[in-house]
View 1 (cartoon, rainbow, N blue to C red):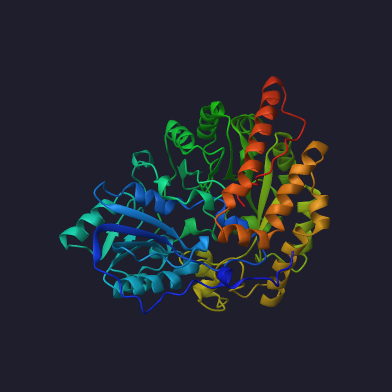
View 2 (cartoon, rainbow, N blue to C red):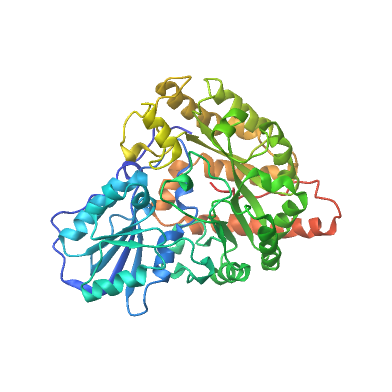
Amino acid sequence: MSHDWFPRPMRIAPPLDESVRPGPVRPRYALLINPFYPKDPHASFGKHVLTPSLALTSIAGSTPADWEVRYWDENLLQGPPPWEPFPQVVGITVHLTFAERAYALARWYRQRGARVIFGGLHVISCPDEVRPHADAVVIGEGVQVWERVLRDVEAGTLQPVYDGDYRRPYRDDPPPRRDLLPRDSFLTTTSLIATRGCHNRCGFCYLSTKGLHMPYLMRDVQQIVEEFRADGQPYAVFTDNNLGSRPEYLRRLCRALRPLEKIWSAAVSIDVTDDPTLVREMALAGCTGVFIGFESLQNDNIVDARKKSPRTEDYARRVELLHRHGIQVNGSFVLGFDHDSQDVFEQTANWIEANRLECATFHILTPYPGTPLFAQMEAEGRLLHKNWTLYDTGHVVFRPKHMTPEQLAAGYAWCYRRLFSHHSIWRRRPRDVRAVLPYLAMSYLYKRSNRFWYWLIRRRMTATVWWGLVEWTRRRHVRFRQRLAEETEPARRLCAAVVSAGV
């Protein structure tokens, strides 16, 4: 896959027309915006339309019935957000890499009479930077305070800051408004979240941000089952930080999902494989893939990151356990830790190929503001700049210990070229010959087809093109789990799947 082809709409946000003079504000109308962010030319463009973010649809779900609400995602390449009719309230989620775009959108709508409300992680990590750009900010969980924000707008008593508490029972939240989503634009609109938080607090992870207090909470499993069933999709993506942090909860969830005969993927930590019977329950419930943060193959890096994880030399055995149960593995690897030298790139790629990981995602170590890693890098004078747009795990923003920034950037790009090469795709093919064809279909359509993805996204044809493959995968997996259920020992054969995990 060539990285020289990088169309402007994937790099640069759509222009905001300064000549627009909208009509009067429509009372009780809220527009929710997911701002544009530049895409990584090394990775698949398809990852951006796998499934929608739950943040804004959850906010929409808590909108009062007497308010009209609309959802707009700039990353679907349909142009800038709408302005006819002109909204009374604009809600914008603000993350690190698209903070500047969020500020530009806020400025444009505020100048024309809308009240702009910010929420999101960047509001928590950099509140003093964010506040001047909005009429109000929500710090923490926005779902529980959104109705109060809108009522204050109506009464003319909008406060500058609203605090949401992540400790409130998660089961009390209303379901997301998936009916607002452009269903043709996503591989699946069934993004689910069953738990909040993670039992790890890795020093580089945004969950370790100062001021973010997110205890591990779980929703009632029947709520998840009903949401999955109601959306009518064959495939769901769990967006939990770590669905496996409470193994017994995951077991109950799997047993409740099993009768649906649908498929799903989720992010889990590798220690989910501590209990092979839990892996079997996942497979029987329809899990076709997992996204696992291996982070590094160097134990010293894992220790430094304060991640609770098995020894890295045991990773291969655990991957094989997942494979035996028909569960694909998308491994996440962070490059540039303090114990990494220039040989980390080839070592990581060789390990991925030797263990036949169906997918892998690479990240340059990035010190997010407010995290222990950021504090360390800043204290050591190793930060290169604070241009948040480049804090996207695809750019080097700090000075590594055992290589130059240029060497780290080149190694990151090389890893993706290696992973997406014909040679690597073939080397990682499943051992079961019946699984090879669907694996190749996934690898080439998903990983080596950015031109095709650009065309699909622009024409809102993602669901149309992929639905048949997803449904085929679901039917094959139903047959696989029927065979698995009849066996007294874990399955010895691989199950072919088209949809990769966590992409």
